[in-house]
Length: 191
Image 1 (cartoon, one colour):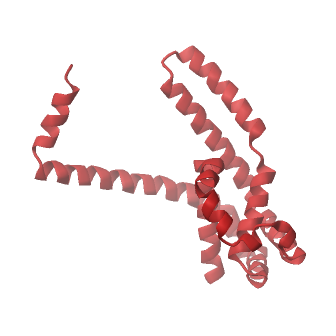
Image 2 (image 1 turned 45 degrees about the vertical axis):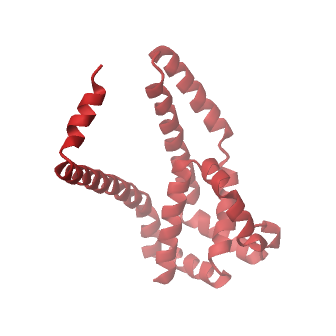
Image 3 (image 1 turned 30 degrees about the horizontal axis):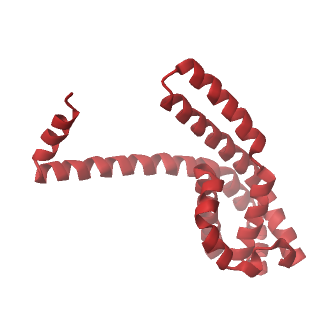
């Protein structure tokens, strides 16, 4: 069970890292990553049997499909931001299409898969990887792997809804305690 929970955490983390743009996250965390577990960051230092098992696990759970889907979604989100931010809609559409084509050409799913090999190596022992392979080789494990993307998407939608409700409720509480908040905002919006 511990291994399943750990893999869920890895899935969630991986999904959000990819969605937020792996390059941004890597740039922000580069000093911490370099100092943490440097011995395990180089695939040449990794036990070849463990590396092969990690690669098998990544393939077994369909991680490559998740990487591709998340990259497509990220590209679409960046493209949408371009269309929203530019007032000239025709130009925005052309730039958005050009960006999407370049993003797809530059996003390297193989590089992301290599990063995942290092991440799995850092967080799991060889025996734990073997346990995960056994689990994901089972019918329940296969079902879990198939259902995980839908679970993650539903969790993300639910999380956004809960977050929005909490923000709305918090703002209402703030306005109840500070009645001048609403009037000061309206006054600042007047031309």
